[in-house]
Image (cartoon, rainbow, N blue to C red; front, side):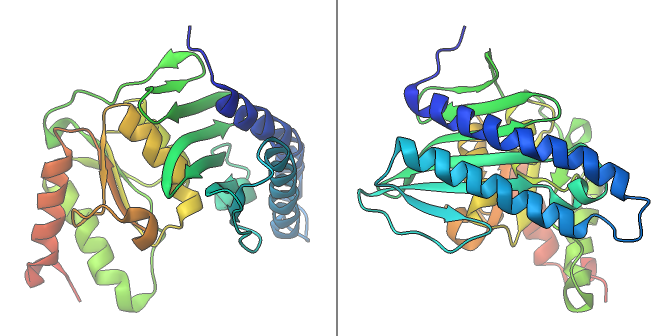
Length: 271
């Protein structure tokens, strides 16, 4: 049985408390689907309430830590540590009554993410990891899949469709990965996309334009499950650039080559 550290225990307790209100609000959103008002205002309030709960609970445990959160201004650190939190990753799914969203919490020390947790409150799955100690879902150890070939792979692309100016390269990348043999899906929750790569459900994931709170926890979980995480061009600054590629060790280099080939071949980027 996996033994959670005090840090992970604090994160899990905070996520659980925030999730109680999210679940209640999610059930209400489902009812609002047929109303004239619609669920958008309700989802925004749910997001803010969940973030407030997370910040309150995490600050109790680490009063000197800074905060980087999706819905509020960054708070500076007094001790070189920082929480990076997304209270509701997969907001559009939440808005439409789709039960695929999560709470994401990462803990950063001296610039390195050392612990991460992604909690799916609908499925009651807690994905968590600490640097050098492995990755888990609830109490089960995680390992990325052992699939070797693109033809057997399920790859996830997280980015929402961009505006007209960027649409051609967007579709070219997706078509390039499909042409390489892989199946491609889009699920709309970056933290869960990464958690599923760690669990071996997905074999890879790439996206551009994400924020640190979307990926900080999930990227650590993938690495601790034996996966590779870089930018989609191979660099290591994905938290800063918002450009990320996570995959199994065998498929990661194949995806890098596939995306590079698409980007350097004008014939593949349709106007």
